[in-house]
Length: 248
Image (cartoon, rainbow, N blue to C red; front, side, top):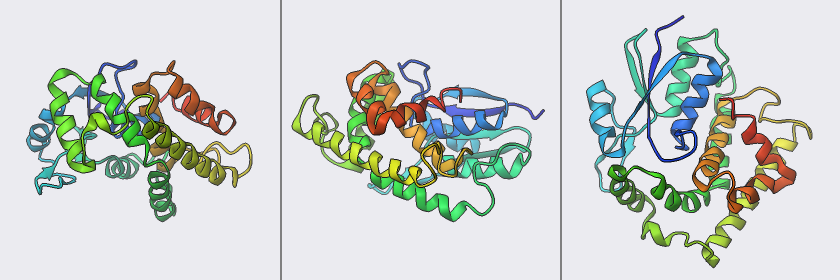
């Protein structure tokens, strides 16, 4: 058994603690593979310093030209490797631990990249729906950083993106429902009982979609009317889909 991997995640005040639609992708991947790991919780203002201490470079650039350091990130003491970005982490784990379930099965890389792009396009409105609520789920020291950089990317005032009960928010939910309906049609092309994009096997494309929906569930609240609405769309497909990842 390898030494436990160190997994860097973002804390928040939600049921189950883990909430980020980005870091959940790596948490699901680690759990699916059955690899031992420990979690280190890192507040938003400390992400850059943590990455630099581990020797991990930025994963992108903010609109103002500054380097963008992000979570998820892992450090694997067995290989003394530190890496960021959920897809890069998944590829590393597939290569380093080949006896575990692969989330990028051989020959699916191009298919999955195209599928993930299509998913992100179809459910783009979920960001403006969930992020303003996520702000209130953060610990105080992370709130200003979260707000500043999300506004830098998407523009405007975070608190005006999707006011509760507004026509704007209602339209965003209609867009999300339409996008998920489109995805449901893709999944149904495998057969009415197909749970995942390749049938019964979980791939990274499934993990990406599940992480986004779990993010919405944990931020909006599993008992909220908004989440209850989402999970009931497409004859309850999305509630069942997320339930399939609860053990992860």
